[in-house]
Image (cartoon, rainbow, N blue to C red; front, side, top):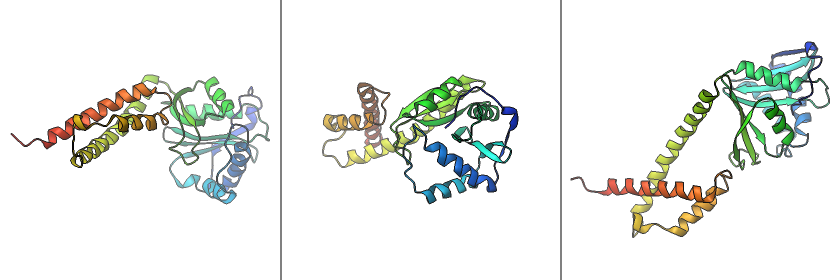
Amino acid sequence: MPTDDPAADLDEIQFRIALKQDLPAVHDVFVASSASPGHPPEGRGPEEVRAWIGSLLDRPGELWLACRDDQVLGFLLLRGPWLNLLFVHPERPAQGVGAALLDLAKALRPQGFGLRVYQANTRARDFYRRHGLVELETTDGSSHDDDEPDLQMAWLGEDPLTYLRGRIDEVDDELAVLLARRVALTATVQDHKEVGGEAGRDPDREAEIVERMSAHVPGLAKDRIAAVMHTVIAESLAAWEDSSRPPE
């Protein structure tokens, strides 16, 4: 859990890349910090957590440590444009370590970076907001193993508009793949219905779809989801009808 105390004694703290032999100390910081208020109960067993920490250097990324002498005070993990982890040991006082680690992430990712934080962790959310991060997306957490309601925050970097447009491009690419799947599935359904096309639309079924989707998109009202899905279904049906027409 990062802290936002005024900086003090930072001249005594060194920041360096972690090595394999540092991972037990990283484990100790994570276990102590993740037990702080705002974190959900750890769903993994002690050995699973130890194995996960032990694998952090097995994938591309940068694991940085904040140390005083030989003691690890905190760490961060960067993977591409994401700050995956930032933790400070709550029982090893060193004012400003969390802020200094976050400043390090900004220096290493001047184009911006995103992170995930639990909705219940108001202390962490306040910390990140105070240091210039913005809240982008709230979800129910179902796309993650812990299934905890969360939000995505981001530091927008030196050119916020470029960073945000890049994030939109990533979402649009994902959306294109999902739309292709939706169109293909709609076509197959129509091939198995007695009455297809617009005439065969099922309002009750579509209402169920909107209801289910709304649980995953708390920031979008049901009527707006309904409007989006009406268009998606209508255009999917139109594509099916076009493909079903015999060539002229």
